[in-house]
Image 1 (cartoon, rainbow, N blue to C red):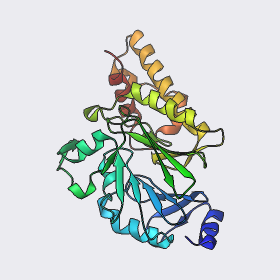
Image 2 (image 1 turned 90 degrees about the vertical axis):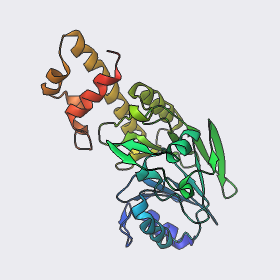
Image 3 (image 1 turned 135 degrees about the vertical axis):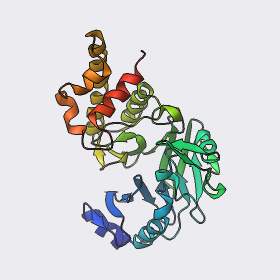
Length: 284
């Protein structure tokens, strides 16, 4: 990648690409790519590149055009944070090796139900060729470690995070929806209580000035991730209190929204849906 192009992009906080994907520089060799699907991270070395997630199948051409715009000719690795199709749809990237948890490969290879819709098994060309059971370290170029850590049981049973220690950046997939309420998929092995454990595991990796790439939403700080975890823990305690007070779920949903939850109500889930998620996550 040409040095002058890297420096030019690094100066600007965010630009819109001709390929309809938003490009946000994270570090000198890291970019956040955003289209209609989940967030994608591009890590570019001197002669190779890596993607964290690959977006929607329908945006595959846009993704490739965006990489070309950034001067990236070849993608050597794709790491999937979980199996959902807005994160794995572009996996059939020419020449790329896909890495993910064993559960992710299994999920892609058989039909799935998501949001009450039946999805067929995905083409074999999208399946991972390498798996990570616990932890794996790659090197982008000679000296850039990339750590892949399996964190199953939060959003789905196929979750993984990707840590770039030299940059202090972590991509966590859909265990974090920045600025929104969490989404948990019990039908895919997800669990809100486990999600908190996984989020704290991610938080512990980050330096004080670290940056977090969520599965959806804008680039975030370590402090913002910590606040999000605190919001989930507050929600759990509030539901415990509501049950002790004899409230039903319906009564809780109709109650005034507590202040700690107010900043997160502009996302995919309404406050009522969030209360239902928390209610069901706790033992009845």
